[in-house]
Length: 190
Image (cartoon, rainbow, N blue to C red; front, side, top):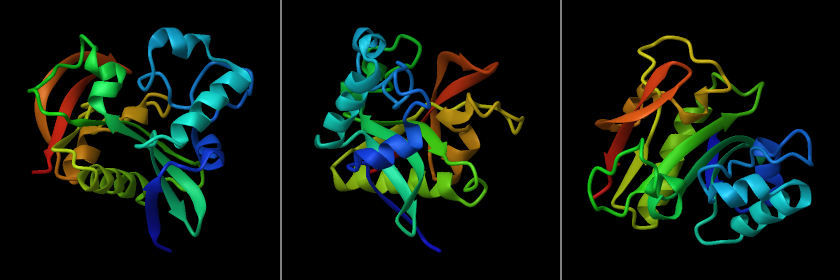
């Protein structure tokens, strides 16, 4: 079976991968870095879902989805950094003035893990950003030095995952997740 990575334009597939278990909640849908914190905290239930549906119809959409035989199995959030909260984040530095794209969240459905989905997602996200003219893609994974990362905190990816895709460490950050420092990884696309 081959993994295909496509833009996240199908709302129902996004819901399958990152929709909240409790429809009235104000969490997930991978919005915390995508929209401002005031809006993110205020959106609940149908309003939150409507906002994500609207983002799926924007250009570019909110990320990419990995499919196995048309079944959505993985998610990666991807967007130009300037339109995310990373543009204003004091803990994640700006390396330069390039209009980079940020790749910040991965989710692989249970039952599909350990099959290369995360690697396909990062490769597909990079290909999509390259096709859209991005000069570089950045990620902000944990530098866990091979130690186990709690699954709820592993959503940012690991340094090793990004290195396997050709990214290089560009900077330290002031951010820590699950006790591990996060690093800024970058892949130049020019």
